Amino acid sequence: MARRLRFNGTGGSGGGCPSVHEDLGSGEVIVHGPRLTDPEDIAQLQHLSAEEVAVVVPRELLVDWTPKEKTRQVRTIDLGEFSDLFSKFEHTAWRLETRRRYASDEANDRWDQFIETGSVTEDWSEDTPTSGFRKTIRDQRAQGKRVERVRLVDQPPTTGQRYLLEGARWNIKSGEDIRNLWRADAERLQLPAEDFWLFDSRLIALLRFDDEDQLTHVDLITEPAEVVRCCMVRDAAWHHAVPWKQFMAEMHSDA
Image (tube, rainbow, N blue to C red; front, top):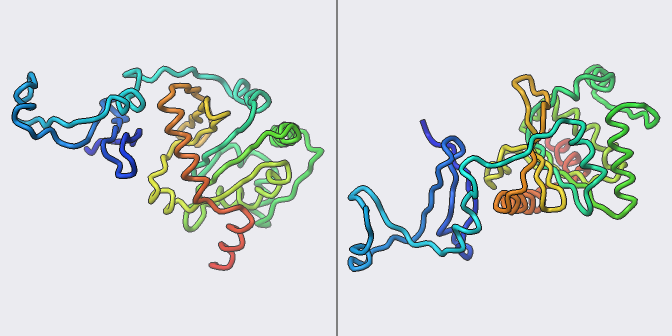
């Protein structure tokens, strides 16, 4: 069975070599770079077998991109503590939204209305977690903070994705900047399948779901190399994603 490799980072200047990858299954680290070829240099290496190849990498590559723990140390929090993060961040909250379905979206009357009519209306006075979240976002935006997300969309979109596309106007009215990216483009860019929030470019909230697509808990990660990797993901996704209004217009014109 093929390994599940994730690109961690590179010490190269544009060519992508030398680089570090991490095996998500075993935790092993794969390094590739220029081969060591000088016979006198190779003769100094100990325990180099005939099946092995020596490569040369800058020290900074290993310092910056090699995982610091064999098993990443994370702190797991419940959904209540996760919700509190949105009232505590200082500057930015950014989301990569990658899943095809979120079970929590289907547990309200708004979902039933969408299935019946294909549209979503909003009641701002409604006492629901969604309304509470949007009020928090409005309060944070009033303080000059940014809340942004990129949503991946399949071709054709799943029912859950169409629901989120239709209802995004209300999040945007709350102050979010929402952009969309076709999944095929995300795969071409080698964006990860992980679904996460990134707070203040220093704290990752990795969302964990069960087999029924229900959010169960959140892992908080502060490992510097992992945070930098997610910042790189954010920059790539944000650069290529399309603002919601433009995405909707283009999607309808192609229909």
